[in-house]
Length: 344
Ligand code: ATP
Ligand code: FE2
View 1 (cartoon, rainbow, N blue to C red):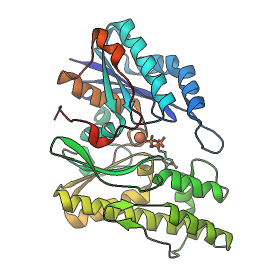
View 2 (view 1 turned 180 degrees about the vertical axis):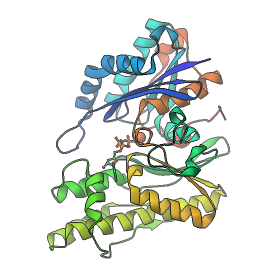
View 3 (view 1 turned 30 degrees about the horizontal axis):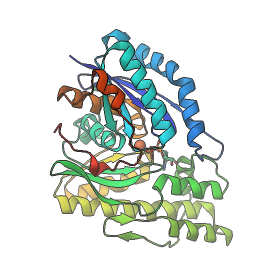
View 4 (view 1 turned 90 degrees about the horizontal axis):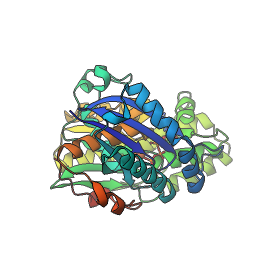
């Protein structure tokens, strides 16, 4: 029996989740927000510091676990914004010392992928946005990781999670948020654009994909120009979704073909978009692949996925104890394929 607590603090979100034998007992999140959505790393870190003890308490209460029952503390030490990562690490070290338990540093991007293994199994229920296929988690998926800051297509190959494709400029979520702000829709833009798109029709936009890599800044400029020329925001929103999601789905399909894998998994906040989910589903059906989408609270940044991967690593003995805890550090620029996957 192992109870692992996971701490997430790579960017906006401070989250704590608790996992026991592969089951999520709790998943509490607090988000640092600004009017514009722009993130000031030091301010975000300050936010995390202010609420960390409360989130700790809430996560334990929700899980009905006493802190003395915890066997290890996992935390996201990479990649992300240095001040935010440092705050999470300080808190994790403090708690691990107080409780006399081990520390398990976890890569945030890899956690997004690993959590797909229990997609649909949370509390034994099917997530809201699911269909029957999701009842069983993904075993060896291609991950389309589409969040604010990140856009990557990741899959396991020869001892590592490799990045098969990624954005060459900004993350897809930041791209959507930037455009939404430009047309006066506020932050976060994703849900607003999704709503507006329902009443829109198609206008041609640049389509930017090279192999399995994508880029968004040219499309952003083009959208802004079209807006200034008076095109309707509904049409622009619709066309944005159709174009950019088609790019992501095309790159994902190439990764599936290239790796021969038969499962696609969504991760990241943009994965909440129902049109993106629908397009992924259609592509997977045509290819005879399975499609997995976690529930919303596991798509966005969260502590449960950190705890979940932490527990897998803990059970394989990948953990830091005693004096070595002082040597653990953050790694803001660690790449997904820098991580040696020794737990598979
Ligand atoms: P990361 O550090 O992983 O990049 P993040 O905090 O930037 O994390 P997430 O919390 O994973 O990102 O997701 C936030 C993003 O998801 C925002 O850009 C937001 O606009 C986008 N988003 C949320 N809901 C939707 C939606 N329905 N459609 C499109 N985008 C969405
Ligand atoms: Fe993330």
